[in-house]
Image 1 (cartoon, rainbow, N blue to C red):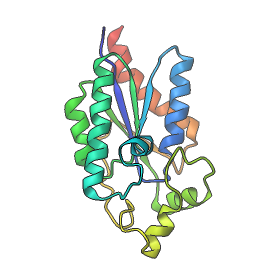
Image 2 (cartoon, one colour):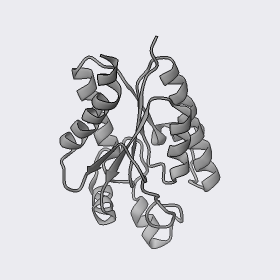
Image 3 (spheres, rainbow, N blue to C red):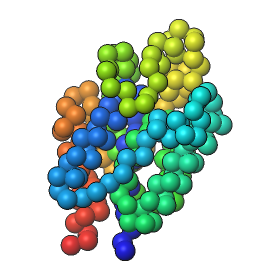
Amino acid sequence: MRGGWCVWITGLPGSGKSVIAQVLLKKLEAQGMNAQIVSSDMMRTVVTPIPTYTEGERDMIYNAIVFVSTLLTQNGVNVIIDATGNRRQYRDFARGKISKFIEAYVRCSLEVCIQREIQRKETFHAPTGIYKKGLTGKSATVPGINVPYEEPLHPEVIVDADKLDIDKCAQKILEAITKIFLTCQE
């Protein structure tokens, strides 16, 4: 059995990662490919059901995400990681553990992310009102506001989510997956 591949969709909260991951999954399925979304927000419901978003807790969550994703890919499952991963070290750790790995950066201005986060109806288990809490001092752990979001230095694909619609973003990531992982198998 060939190992699966992994794409980590990273970006600020509200950038569109979860929606892009869902559309990407549908596009893959339409082409006869299966994948599993591993979401930081879903992982938190199991590992830290009452999250505090401290650095130590983030380390634990991202280590768990990488562990699960590594196991899945080693067993032939393709993985879409849907997680902010605000520090490069988290994404670099995944890159070091998963042999077929790419990073997809969902680039979006903080202002647009704040507006989207306020207006979104589907949260995909993400907490609500995080930017408001960060800007008013009720939370000191919001990436891009109170803690850094370290942009990827060399992502395999960048999608400008404040310029492209969700479908085009997902399509661009699909094209990168196809070019990097699937064309070499033919």
